[in-house]
Length: 463
Image (cartoon, rainbow, N blue to C red; front, side, top):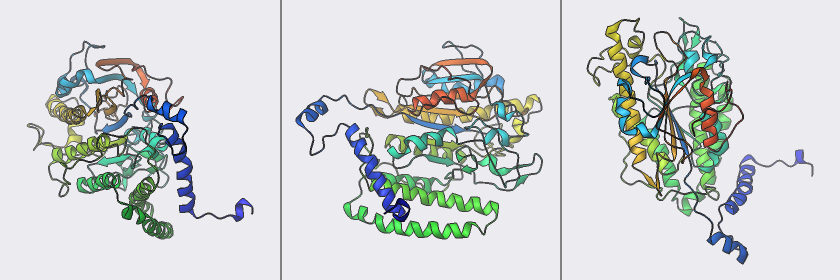
């Protein structure tokens, strides 16, 4: 029988591929199979303990910063934290503060969209009203997910606060979709983010419960897969009849369905992980009742979920958007003296009365980073903490919001990546140093090394 005449059902092929992938991984784990020789048993008994994996979170906030209150004056370890970074004082030794980083491909684009959409790709963003979007390539998080996502129930976790906005920004001629995503599976395919804390929590707890699923639950997966096939078949027929904006909405729905499919596949075959957390359950965490009206509560619920996902090894890759691009969010109820639009404060027009509220909003975002870092630091993993075993990228897509300048980007990298980062410094890079140089270094520490990424010239020295 020739290969083209041997038609294997898609589910059967994927299940077979899972077994083929699983056997070498089981051997790599050092676990003794029933047929293992006495020599193999002896080698396994003295095998070194497997180190906890490195996790990576990428957090984005919009509208840039008031630079004088963000960037330290001194380089190296003996730097003083400026006003906007003061909430991070207790984590000064846990992080790197950068200056001088740039995204060269963002200099030619008007407004915000050509900066935000490529925050994690570093490549050119095609100017379009929405029919042929492109951000040049996959984002750093999705590149990692493609390579190591098979080791966890969720390849990656994408969270946000604001819903996706479609249509065209007539002022600059870009589709507003560009301002709603930082995670991209391909140049033209954004990854849907979950903005409802309860739904995000249910998604995550579905994974955690799957770790302890009964045999009956696992037998149910075959019927579930059959239903998913019907969903995809119907969706393919429907998609061709929709307009571009509706296609994106449908794609977001299909992403959530594919997420279920991946989880079913993960739990139907041998667990491929070398390292397993001490506990994969957290009984003390309750699902939120809905989307909170308080912006800080909403953001912290999402940060809690990232910490929980990393602690339980449900995923090792996460992204979070504090708000969409061009965010008009009003912080007046959270911060004294900031009643008004965040976006308008960022367009300060060199008016002194706008510097203070702009800086205070920057400081608020730094406070939320400190909140997450505290969560990660409080989780022990052997002789390290979860923060020690993580990388948390935190920043915006432009420096000064008034100039829409993608040079001298406000970027922080917290955590030590399992001891592979020498933290506690302000790294003042030469002007126009590609941000993607840092991404090359981060990819290496995630175990997904590349020779180049985006517009990188070389790896940035952070070890």
